[in-house]
Image (cartoon, rainbow, N blue to C red; front, side, top):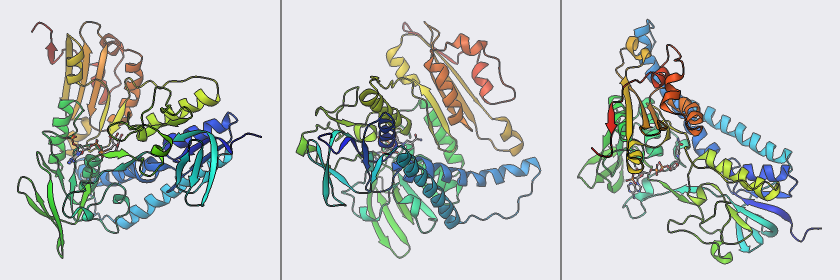
Length: 459
Ligand code: NDP
């Protein structure tokens, strides 16, 4: 008999933890996974999945508007928040059930309890008042939303944890932050008919993305009716009978029904007992790991958002899989973080892979930038002047496509396929040699002939 209760003990049943647990069990390991909330983690329970369902819900209003130009008379439409939330919850319950079944089918023991490290190989299950031991421990606890804790009235703010379960649809919402969560929810609320304001501290929303995409997204979101306030932050929130009274640093005052804080997430390490066993954190509180996902303590590993590398679900899944391959299938595997395609489900949507123009300028001498901004076909009859943007960043020396950025309908879907080409090292000549699919918006990607900008080292 083994000296430990388990070969692998996973703390956190989100995307990364579940994948590692299931695969390790497939390879014959005795595995348990502890979860204090719901199996599925942020992505399935209160992140990507419910968010995308709400994005779908919010798009209908735009479709109804567009329909008239195609000859439709759409009767008076009404939206019922409670129906959406109930149906969304039912779907999340179904997925949660599937995750549980899948783990059980692979003989992973699910422990519904908070788990904390109490000794290098011993884990305390606080919900069950007992301890277990494991040869290897994986921490996959993800992240938690940040709140501006020193803000007077911070207790009136909600985060992405609560936004999925509001009893009623707010008539007026203020969203703070200019990142993924803030902007995706701005699109959702706006589409559902809520008066929506975004308050962002910086110069332009969505820092880190290509500047043309950021500026065009800003324009298009405003055209759809989202108010975006830049260079500003909250200074106080007070609850009164008619709503939440807000003041900002620039002197704005507003009354709203909800304030959604979208100012980033932090690794969830609080109370895990990491200091007890000597696991090191970085300056942002993330667990430090090497390329093999190993912490400074030999048998303790971490994957996903708790390590704050690339905080995306598919990345956590790959890290979890790599860990199981390495430790339990004698197949050392390292995750490749280069050219990760990604989507932001703003409205309009963003799909992107590879370098932004600014990143390419910082690392390459000579670049050709291809930029197309046009009205997609559907918008002509719809009488909707929303623009689509496509941009290719090409290394003029090697002809390699370094980055591709799309803003507009279905761009998330496109980025998945472009991701393959760019991962394979496609050149602009490869794009040019590819026959267009007509009539589509994406054909623009293979028909861009003249660079809109040539950037040369000696200029
Ligand atoms: P982001 O890091 O994307 O954005 C945080 C935003 O809040 C930034 O605009 C930031 O400004 C601002 N901010 C940070 N601190 C403060 C502060 N103290 N006061 C005011 N503003 C502040 O985080 P999100 O919460 O939107 O998302 C968290 C992570 O979840 C993302 O990094 C992403 O990886 C993941 N995610 C992915 C999605 C997808 O793939 N579609 C969807 C949702 C989330 P500044 O730019 O100036 O730093």
